[in-house]
Length: 198
Image (cartoon, rainbow, N blue to C red; front, side, top):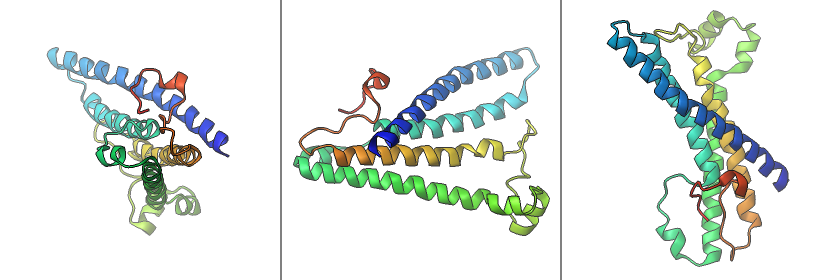
């Protein structure tokens, strides 16, 4: 089970890293295009909104990836000062908390998107909003004219990936002897020189 979950988590992390790189490349290009448009007195208004939405995707996917690699900002003075066995217990508790966070976020997203009700009303968004008073499927972006829920899909996606990464890290922590340091959540070839905690 550990190998299966770890392999799945590693593949998700590779995909996340690719998406993060793509967004990090696209964002400055969008901003530069908008600056050029404004300089020529022909601003591209929808790029502003798209940039903000893409930055949210970058932050969410980046959060999932840093939880996988254990590179999230943390104060480790206490964890580093205790004996190895207690350190392992504390790391297990941390991994459990991240897993609970991921699962809680997934449950909240399920309640927010409410796919069963949407299917029950035949994907009629007006009927869905009338029954649930949840207008998420009808709300559109101001300048793009696209339904906002397409951009909000990153939240349940990250809830799933975070849960997989947290479970992988938890299983890895439990399987690692207390006398051995907990390595990064990424395999060596993927981790590279990312500065992962060893």
